[in-house]
Length: 243
Image 1 (cartoon, rainbow, N blue to C red):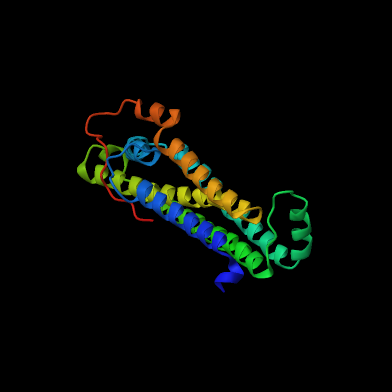
Image 2 (cartoon, rainbow, N blue to C red):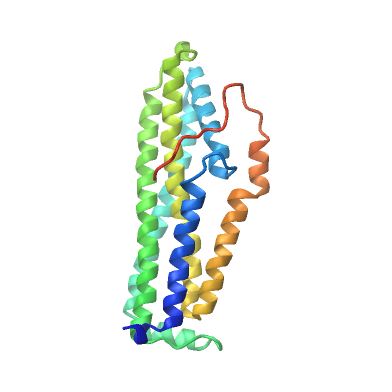
């Protein structure tokens, strides 16, 4: 089996899994005090929920939630089409191989290697679909809580503040899962290069990690978000998100 798959392919696949899991653990699961896009928005969501409770008319807030849900639904639907396309490729392997043979530096893959590469893409996008579907359900729960929000005259009570914090946490969890689904798309694009060469696959995986790190930890967008002034009492949240 080892000879059939090939050592370069096994090493490239192991590198891919290591990079994805390690980056996910680093970005999402430890040190909640670090500066990321997710942490920068967490307190803003709680502030949004408090402002929502203060408003008598909450149609605007419902519209925002609907827009967020439409974005998740779009990606979930797109993922289904991608999975259908991958399944269709399984039935036309010869045509796909012929297309790859036109690339000068593309390696020749055996039937087993080809199946494993297709299987990897299927696993990636099935994972993405589950993340998008779960995020969509969490947004549904959040919009139900939106309808159950306390009246505006109770906005200053502790119960209202706790309600705002709880609903903001549900939305943050939904965004976390949506973000993981999007991250799967990035790594899925890296996995496509495996059909060309395992070394290119390894390099593309590292490039994806660099791009994700740059955007989530060092982007100008993060700097703009963190420069937004917040009312007193809104420090950096240390709540652990579990997707």
